[in-house]
Image (tube, rainbow over all chains, first blue to last red; front, top):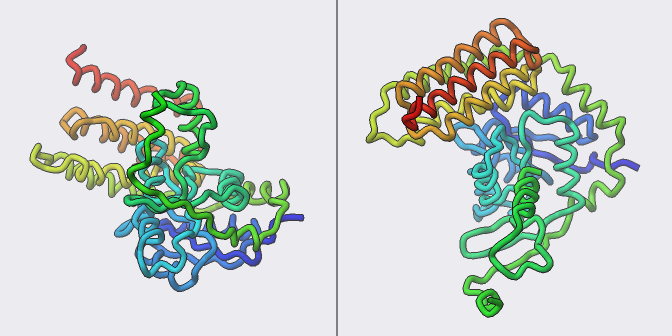
Length: 172
Length: 173
């Protein structure tokens, strides 16, 4: 029995038309039929408010409003219809500081371009099967940024191997 | 040591576990290999023409280079570099999606270079122009895939140019 994606709605925010078409085709192959699209973060937020999709897949670099700003609005704007909505952010960035930047505005999953069909599926599957709790603090609202809490950690110094694993987990 | 880490937290954080509506809708079972293979074939066999997009991003990169040539130290470096990073990132991200893996690799090296330079000085501009010229040649020559041995040679040459630039800036030979 496969996932029943026919009841799921997805908003794809991408300013590159061929990429948008490609993404829609892949999602259709997955069985998703309700797909909305927008050309930048501003249009994307309007579409998000109108259609209330179950999942948002957005490119990072768009003008005039990028995917980071879109995520920030989804998480923090009082008019956001679902602050908990899963957001997959696509980007060519792989540098740690960029991934951290995405994580710190509340992105749920990070998808590095170019990607293959299984990469995309793994991100969606992770959102379905391993949803993260949300954290609301003075300066952050979004999915818990800790992928894994070390069981026996009681000090500031971690082993180098743990750091490597952490970095790998950040970019999935 | 524990007394320091067991202090009462100063900043409160609320943990919320929202309902998993997606799981409720899709059920279980995942997607079969057949479906994933079909989606992968669709990606590999897509016939979208990347050339017009690539030319547009290369033109935007060239405009960014022209802008960077007029850089003065009182300007915001990150702002000036953003006009170079944006089109380069688009080339990196999308090249490989549309069969131009060599473009992705070259643009990736350029991103790495742009992420670490202190400012767009004359030496840096020359290197960025070399990257631009190379990528334009790849697109004009419709060199798809990774470009084989020649593609690797091109990458090595660009990497060497970057290394020379960093050595020169550190006062080495």
